[in-house]
Length: 207
Length: 205
Image 1 (cartoon, rainbow over the protein chains, first blue to last red):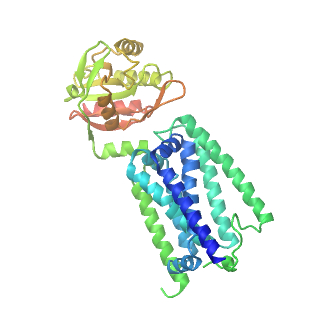
Image 2 (image 1 turned 60 degrees about the horizontal axis):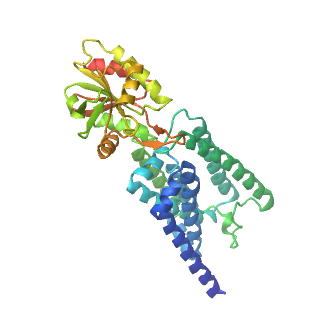
Image 3 (image 1 turned 90 degrees about the vertical axis):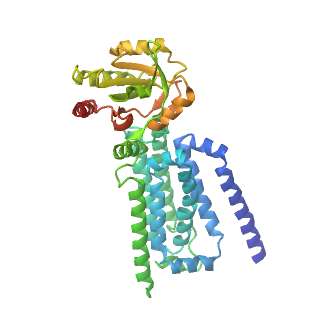
């Protein structure tokens, strides 16, 4: 049993590594970043998801000890909030296109400072904590999307104003769908979001 | 640091401080959330030298950007096929010219509209654009940068990003630029701030 799970982890880790490197190739970056919608709503979420899936492969005892040493779930959630919000700044998007340092920072910080801390914190968050993370994220997405739709100016010098508007619409629609889905999990899955309740029962303690 | 709650509070505070500092640093003290604002803030703080480029105006005259040194120069970027913003840019530049005392025009202050589309904008199209707004080719020149490499370095120095749109034209960040007597870019304003822009120029005359 242990052997198969580590096999699975190795294969998964390899797959994620390949996906990460693929995303980092100039061809993939050019294509993803040519449109604001793909940049913000495909590439950046994918980087976070890679971080989330990769972090889940880390041994549980190791995750717990990192969490315990660094003050529990709350600082981890705050790190993820700051890092994800930063990459929503129009200026950060432009910088990622024009400044290689910013691009590298994006590729490192989205998995490491958004995906990784969310995974570590998630199992320790109560329903209310998870609800806070979800509603915060969903409302931010909706508000930002709305701003992009109604903004009288082009917020990114590197993107067409039409592109900004459609990215805005995708964000608003995405926020509504996410909200409905999350609301659904409240009734169906006990309100824990995408994750199963922690088997160790630690999911109820707010570290 | 013994109790976990205390530790959590301390580390959370540190994270908040650090995160706030990163935002402060990344937005020029919460003032510049977009690259466009950042460009303007940076120019105000430290005027930027411009590269030596050769231009060709609506009458086919060849000249250098550096020829303007010793005078104040208003610069905007256009392409003559533009049907939207550049049209109003023409009107705005005309308005600025008319707000400057006539005795300073040409002597101490000039205007230059630079096309970033040298393939389409030959002197004939530049002339046509100029005539629409009364650009005389002396006080106000409409010009292109024939050399692509020079054009690229000029756009970079000004911080102008030009991207093709789906109608065969371009979208670009549109603004009013003021180059000082030392040949450095010293001010970038919104295009709806023509009057304050002209007032700034008059104050410097």
